[in-house]
Length: 296
Image (cartoon, rainbow, N blue to C red; front, side):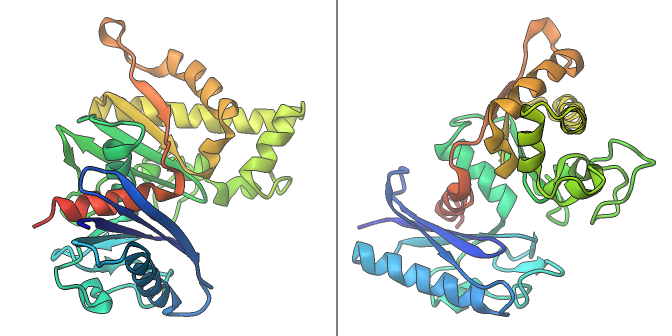
């Protein structure tokens, strides 16, 4: 059977999908690995690829992989990913997987956007950007049907736009960034230690805690300001919001819509659709498969 294998490497798990070139899903799997053990992610990727090939009964026609970090110019390796997944930088995935054809590598947020455009919330869109709200805030953008990558592969790091030049620096050195304003990593700091996660904060807000509600709505207002600004820069048809925080559903999307009523520029009354991601943890794997299909 002719199929594509898309693999998405995360901080502690590997997701994989076997999919036909037209997008029909044949199989999906997730494999966890201990992040504190260097190199285990590479073994987990190879084992998962072998397991899916055994399940389907043949090797894939093409393999694509997505991972955090900046992709090398040759498109086969992650060139820069400091502080996470020791051994990832420079690893040649074609050689590691013993693949007969080159395995193209894509940044994980870029891959998630491609997955959502191919099989998810923005099917067929040509102008779209994605924000993933989790521990940090990731992103990716497509304009005129082309994924924006930039000179070094940094394009799409939308979580690192600055909303407050006097704010604290984020991991990229950006002051008062969107990531600092709503990322899960800073919720303890933003709530003066009262909450350990954004989901705890939202639950308390919905239970009537006035402090929690004020902090949460301030975070959503920052998100709306960033979305409105990025709409002005990128002029999308669709904005996709994904990641663990997006699973809050109405608690996120209803106040976000209210704030966008105030902030968004809508020429001729046209508003941009803001939609939740639908492929969840497999978006990057679908995007990696799509990328493999369209890479020579």
